[in-house]
Length: 186
Image (cartoon, rainbow, N blue to C red; front, side, top):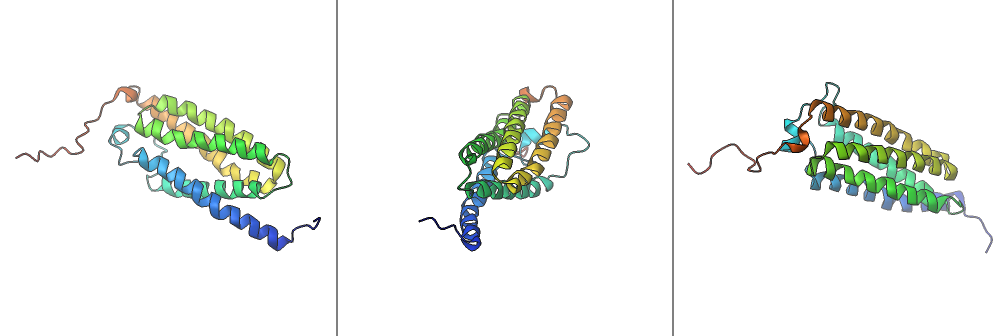
């Protein structure tokens, strides 16, 4: 059979991919943060000095939701490009970049290792840049959907660096695990 798919069939195939990739990326991303107790609820993180330009805490889940949706759409576009010889390579690079993304919260918030987390952000940026270039060889739209993520990684790296600078002993900071300062035995 040598017939080409119609534009409607191609659109439907893209949306089938997107119905898998977008929720998968969003859920895995937020699961990584939730399991590592990320954000202001993390007592260790709450004790750290933050840079003056740090966004309010509500901005992080909003930004990450938008970025994860864009990442999911980008990979769906590439997965839908069945004729491209770079498709497999681009998807593999995305997998590496996304795996690094999923490690950042557990390392920073869970293990309290901001220096290691900064190294992960650098790796994330390199992998995401390589992914963006590979996506561009498959579909330009997929590459453009990666650009805000690259910008966010630069900003996140600067935030991470400033937290290291402002908190030289952060990796050795031990937080009381009790969760409360109230004595319930009285």
